[in-house]
Image (tube, rainbow, N blue to C red; front, side, top):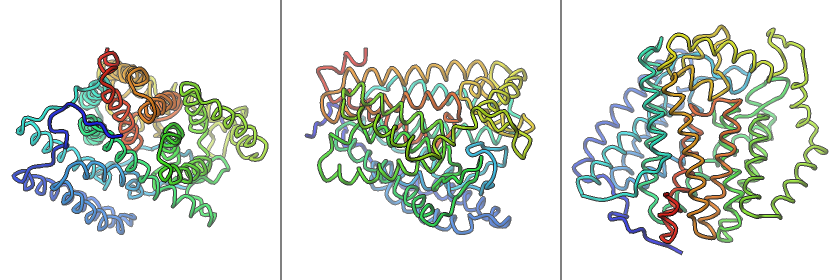
Length: 479
């Protein structure tokens, strides 16, 4: 069933003819800088030698699409974003997966796409404004995310490497832009369907590559004695968090899809589960289980709860590597690098090293991504709460806590305001995603994993949209 919303200009608005020139010009500049960065990387033997030409062609194709219809441009960026981090500098095959180290930041294809998307979104917004089109009101989640993005820019004031912090702040701002765009675009169920299709289409390349490598026994990362896979992502951990979001939402919406789409999504979810296992990311494993349990409980799906119980029992019995992956949590030894082999104990110790960095500027922080530069091991904090305080100070910490609160508020509003069937399944799935997001944030780096946030905010926009689809509950949901 389709339902048109009572907002003028519901066709979404594409850039007008007079704005195509500025869009193409800005795109040329962005792509030019990206290619220059790629050429420099090539001179150092980087794999961008093959990626940059392809990225240029894809970028020009996106510009062509965006100049005709912005909606298709937005969904296309969602579909391809998950495959772009493969262009980042190759990480070592040993060490702690998911631990980004201090390194040079540049305008890689993913960064170029983020900047291009922001420029296109601005031109699209100017077009809508000049045409007098109205939009749904901003959600509290959007306002909070914009506030946290602003705190990131403020943190540049005391950053040791302002350009690195600036690029990171721009990436977070691109996520806020994506949320704002999707909240305006998703004014009917047709667009929600199309966005969901784009999100799960984004998994085809990373999941397919992972399964291909697994069949060939060609692991992409080695850590703690386990061969781990990361698809097209730069590390196993962000890949695992991305899969967590897709699995939790997929389980929620699966029963409410048309038969042909259900049979298309089911094997893809199976592939996502296999890939999640192959990442050997324990926090994502636990968050996925908890997120799916939330879906079963709030969605009142007893059969799903039974499947979870039976599945967990089967995994513990038939897949001993899962138990082995958790075995080091009780260890007190050290590895070859001289660090404790107990990753949880390592985190507690490292948090003690990161926290004193905030003394430099407790109000506005030391700058986004600067935690990696302030310690001898040059690793990220593995705790979003700590990272928000150290890198963005008290200002950013307040903004981050408000952001978490806004996530929960939108989840609660969607549960109360969504209609039955598919709409409610979106609300249920987003509630599970929020739960998983918060759990992973305690022991991992999520808030600045832009590739993960790109898809999370898309689900958030869908959850906000389903409130608008039920006129009888819309006002109550907003309150």
